[in-house]
Image (cartoon, rainbow, N blue to C red; front, side, top):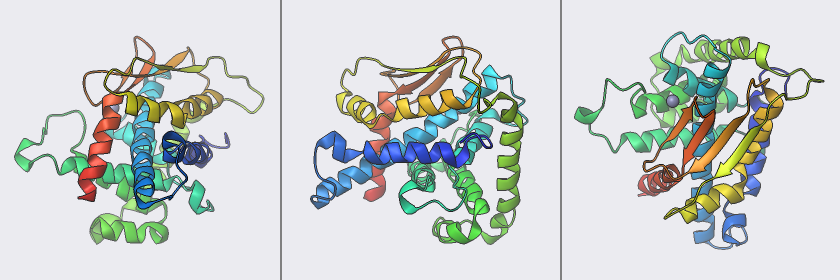
Length: 277
Ligand SMILES: [Zn+2]
């Protein structure tokens, strides 16, 4: 897993965790017992897949701040590209363990979110790129990593031929850059992690469904364990799932905490239903 940054090894591990912790476990039904259960399972996978992307995005911020990594360009783009790098398959994965399904769900999440905003309402001053651009960034890097495998996906989202041309070199530059800056902070094979990443769950309030889905999937614990084993962290970090008053996620450097809001899971549930309509 530590052969380069972590890349597919980490994603693979997460994906198998996701598969076992999905709707079947949460709702206590056999997979595909009926159409409704199968749909619920797909929706839960969509929600959790998007949460994985968000979690890696926030961890990108955490790594930039903990290891004082150089950021050349907009940090929000850089950490989206970090999440994309971690979830890009290296090739050879079987269907079950292919992390690109998480990335594609995440791309669909950004496209669905973009439909909620009128052109005139786009906040061009925002530190993040517009949702549709974040979706296309994933599409380009994924296509660039394996044009043959992801050609149909790129066509489906209408990634223009002219844009496609530079995607392979962008994907290569992205993975090469992240490997280069992160490598000095990756633990050696015989090295013990100096600090751990812990997971906490705050009170659910009106978000019991979301909290239970997250908790029973053991997704956060899986990510925490893998990242703990991967990086030489200078201090203990926490992944805190909690109610925040808004559908969002944060890296709080003062508290050394990645925060995932229950509200965000509900938002992804709504986005899933929206794109099904
Ligand atoms: Zn961010």
